[in-house]
Image 1 (cartoon, helix red, strand yellow):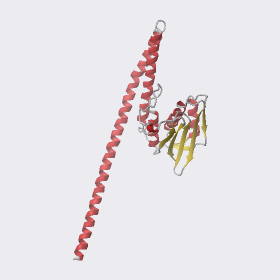
Image 2: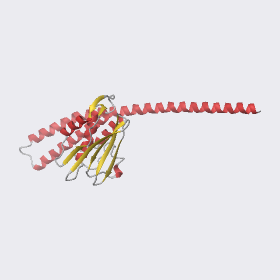
Image 3: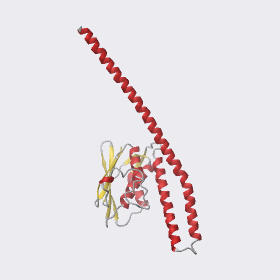
Image 4: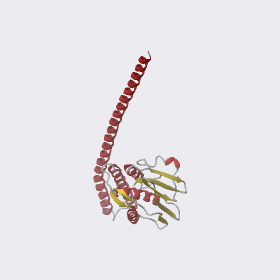
Amino acid sequence: METLQTIAGLAATQLKNAMSLQLRKEMEKQKEIILKDLTKSNQELNDFAHVVSHDLKSPLRSMNALVSWLKEDCADFSNDDINANLDSLLKKIDRMDLLINGILSYASIDRVKKKSQPIDLNELVRDILDTIHTPQNIEIQIKTKLPIVKGDSFKMIQLFQNLLSNAIKYSDKEKGVVIINCISEKNYWQFSIRDNGMGISEKYFDKIFQVFQVLEKSEDSTGVGLSIVQKIIAFYNGKIWLESKLEKGTTFFFTLPK
């Protein structure tokens, strides 16, 4: 009797293990299918955004040229209202161009394979600071020597340029300060870009990295910059987060692998 019970117990255990194994296999199979579908959908969405944005560039250039010619032709007899309207139209065209460029940049991040060339971030940041406009009342400080990382130089330029431009743009103090820092951890570098600007309300912390999220209306802001930053960092399996207090300033932290 005991022998039969033992055999029955072993059989039940084996059956349970077999069912668990089969269930795990089915779950893994479903997971693979879902991942493939998500990858395909994401690629199709990126391709769609790239094609649509690219196709919009051509008529936009034509509009810009036509309005510029119209402004020149009307220069001798147009009034202030007409000139103001034409200037406003040109600004809106320029903003649309910025938006399309942002969408193209966002959509193209996953379109190329990961490159692994050494990039001296000290040189890269210096070049960025030479090209972007920094008002005289804002001081840029680099607290530590920045590392050499492996990656794609264009993506790194997009990453640092967007964060530095944001820190400069939203500086509202008589004496502005932007501080760049880096800490070496075991498997990654932790960077921070801190400013003493207007700060960001905590209710926007989760929304700020979403595409087209703009905290305040601005002709030169598209709401794509921080989305590009987050996507680039995710591309390299890093993380990004922020700390901020209104009227005190904001610090963006992010990590990149060694």
